[in-house]
Image (cartoon, helix red, strand yellow):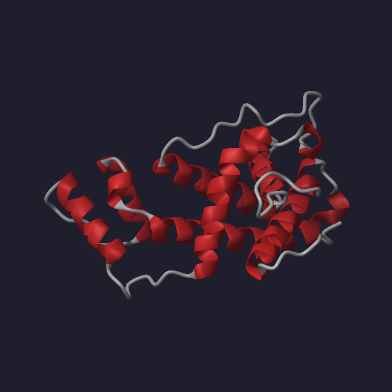
Length: 205
């Protein structure tokens, strides 16, 4: 169930990323369809593949973030959560300046190529989820589509969606998944991510 035979590309890192998405997708499909017999394997895949993948996505997005992409309140929250810099005491402008300097200083958080790739892949995946073809949608519903799942409209919304993915994977890995919209959006993310090709568009599962 969790193997991903597919035609390889010349880019091993991209192939590995897609393979991770495919394994995580298979685990989430088992959760959604309540295949209890797969429980231990599902939790292992989510813990060993899904959660590290989301950590890499978030790390990459943080490494690429720039202060000007956020509203002051959003930037303060990003700084607080990521520990990018100490919180200044002089208002939003000081927060923005300190965060910008911390993000751009070499040596503080060196860019990790795999994390940058994961972040770029995730950004594209979020944008193409609504276009996923019906045959790729495994959420148990008569009208199979993800067209209603919105694309993040800002950097802050992008981070929120990544945080939601992390929460869903954590609860599923602990055997506490709920059949709700966050789980549906998580499945949609991995269904799109496992099919995205280097040339654009979708490949067969």
